[in-house]
Amino acid sequence: MTLELRPNEYVKIEVHFSYKVFVAPTLLMSIGILMFLAVWSGVGEGEHIQLIGHVYSVAGILMILGGLLFIPYIYRRVDNRLKIYAVTNQRVYVRRGIINIKEKDIPLAKINDVQIVQSLVQRIFGAGDAIVQVGNDESSMVIQDIAHPREFRDVIISAIYEAAAEQEARSRQQRLYEQQQQRQYEQQNQYGNYPPSSSGNYGGY
Image (cartoon, rainbow, N blue to C red; front, side):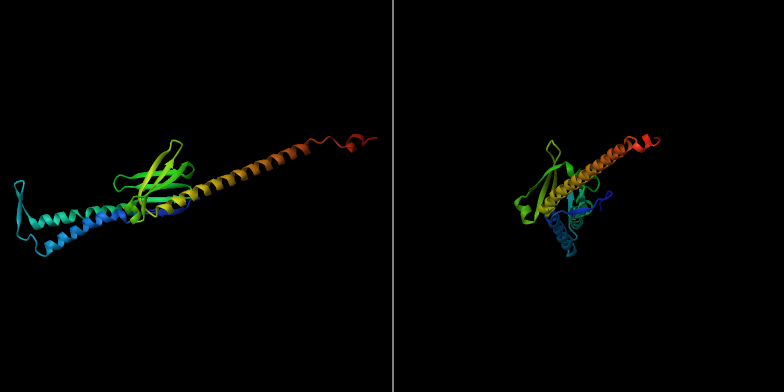
């Protein structure tokens, strides 16, 4: 999934989920693989179990359970592929979701602070949560379990200073332009209001 950029906009950094978020789904998928191998080796073959008045094959149940254990891993992989956590020279953009899409677009000028929170497990995997504080009301947005969280924070802060410096430079250029226009206007008025020359007044004498 790619971010649609605005005019004069470019991506400074884009981060992904840390490997931490794949640990539990990978363990579940491994159990599912073991179930498939067990059925393939003959476990539960010819055996049946009665549940709620129905008879089911043990091997069939193991196959179904094994298949269900693949779902968390597949979901997390698709979620990681479709999500966007990006910092550009204009904004912080967050997009999450597979079915229900959630988007957040934060201009750099509205960001007050960026904090990093890490649990012990997150530190082990090099992960962390980035808390982006927005607006004067100190509201915040939490971006969870991202890889390289400190780099993500540093790029946001750097982008904020760069955007402020560019805005100041544009304002200074605008002020200089307005001052130059004002001087030209005053010079034009000054030259246009000179009194008539003496030769024009006394040329007939």
